[in-house]
Amino acid sequence: MALFAIGDLHLSFGCDKPMDKFYGWSNYIERLLVNWNALVNDDDTVVIVGDVSWGMTLHQAYEDFLFINDELKGKKIIIKGNHDYWWTTAAKMNSFLQQNQLDNIQILSNNSYQVDGVMICGSRGWINETQEEFDKKILAREAGRLEMSLKDALKHKKDEELLVFLHYPPIYAQEKNYYILEVLEKYNIKHCYYAHIHGVGAHKAFTGESGGITFHAVSADLIEFTPKYINIK
Image 1 (cartoon, rainbow, N blue to C red):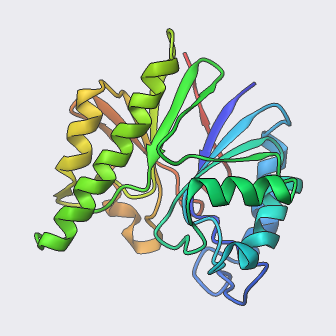
Image 2 (tube, rainbow, N blue to C red; image 1 turned 90 degrees about the vertical axis):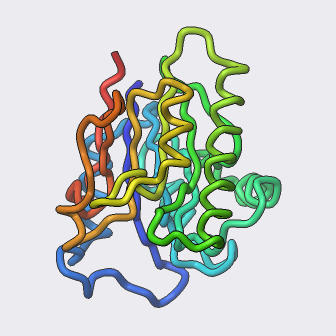
C-alpha cells in the first residue's frame, strides 16, 4: 500500500466549466487519468486536497464523483476546497456516497483516517490576506476544525505519525496563517500538504522546511497532474 496527494482536480463533467482554456491545463483530464493510473494501485490511498468539482450541488457533482470512484485507481480521501460549493454536512455527503455506491471515496471533515502507518488529518484552512474581522473569524474557525481532526486522530493513533492536509497554504509569499501554524506546531506536525496555488502564483508557494515543518505544494498543475507519492518512513 502507498499514499499519495493531489489537489485542485476542478472536474466539471456535470457542468460546463472546462479548465482546458487555462495555460498548462490542455487535455488535463486525459493526462490526469493516465498519470494517476500508471502510478496508483487499487490498494493505495490518494488524498484529494480540495477543489474537487465545479458542481454547485451534490447532484451536479455526481459525474465527477463517479469518475473519481470508478476511473481513478485507489481509495480516495477528500477535503474541502474554496470552490467545492457542493460541500454540505458530513452526514449528507456520506449518505450521498453510500446511496450512489461510491465506496472508494471518503470525506475528511472534523475526523481522521488511519492509512498505512500514518494518521490523515486536515481541513480546508484559510489564507490570511487581510486583517479584517471577518477573516479572523474564518481563520479561527478553520484552525478549530483542523484541531478537531487532530484530536480525533489522537484518540485512535498508536505509533502512527500525524500528517496534515489543507487546501489553503499556511504560508504564501509574505503572508503567514498563524492560526493554522500554531495548531501545526502544537501537535508537532512534521509534514503539511496543501493545494490552491496555480500558474503564475506558483513561485510564491512556499515549499520546504519552516519552523520544523516541511510544506509540500500538490496543486494538480504544479505536479503535472500526477499524484505526489508520500514517503512514509
